[in-house]
Image (cartoon, rainbow, N blue to C red):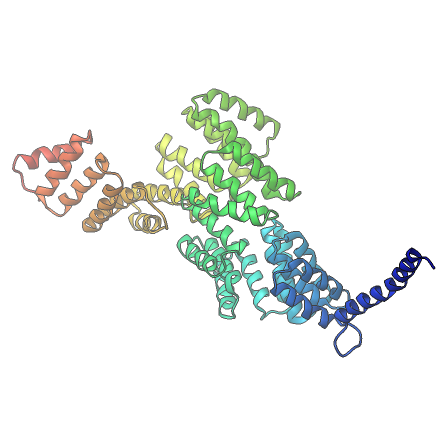
Length: 505
């Protein structure tokens, strides 16, 4: 036989031997060392090893195989996909696990499902999943976390705080901290909410829910610029987090970047079809873009555009609110009131519409009594909003309800990040009305730190020293108020008399 024939024959005969040896090695990898069938437990164990080594894709493949016969593997698979920020896939995993599991594992699957659905913008589904989780395992950590978040979303902050603290005590970690933050938000205690969110982020800086919550609190406390990079971080690693896009749009609205906000709002609406909140946000951004004309001095153009939008969609509170703002910019109180009254009729819990209605009555019409009810409703709908509560305190002070005024304004100045002068000034005014002159000076000194050379602050400080019968300081501060252009006749008359040597009686 020729040499090349022998070579081919030898190669041919060698191939099956090599293939058989490789196949044997592969089978030995798959089989337990003691022989027998590969069980779901074996696959789960191998998946754990791959996950520990950083091979999430390999671990997921093994868990999928195990999940055919093991619901526990489906729960593990959900955790794995959640860890990789594959939110939609994790949601499907938890749903599948929840259908097949019972007791505590079912509660965990449904509790985790509820939290992810909330992040994904599926609010109604999240509430139902939370209730189902609690029904499966009322004492479980994840059902308790989910139920705390659900109660917060329903405005039941006290109940939510109790549940979240229970979850924290049971070792709920960052997820329980985020639930506590949400519940404190629902109570209107943004300082406590911020502390809870920051603690949760410190415990697990890759967690989406507490980072989102912290960004929201920063926006609500006039620190939108600080919130923006947090949201960018969330969107980059969890692009399916619809709530991050919504909050990013709101942050950009707060920063007067309506055109950029439109992109985020549109993304959220596209990702969460049928989400009424996302659709509402689109309208808000559309209105904000129209109101940009006001900032450039084109008030008539804003009125024209928003009137056309209102006539096209007559039953949308956001549009009527926007048109009212354009009328306010034109100093047309009556048409503004008409639009705002229709807006609050359509949506009584629209906090901003109630506030603007109170503002027109209070500031433009000088009707403090007419503004009180609207301001109260605005604060009830959004208790953490410092602007709403400041104006409520001012009206209460004007109406001589000084105890209520002091209580409301004290809440404002104690809010995290509050750095404005208005509430300190109104608090000083209310303390003067209550004849608490030392307390008034404490508030007014704070106001002077924020807004130095303010005629109103100097005038109120003058009256405080008058109440304390301190002639020297009365003359000092009343004189400053006069030099700064203060015109109120009574103060100036007393200043002339005291400067002339008359004693304060």
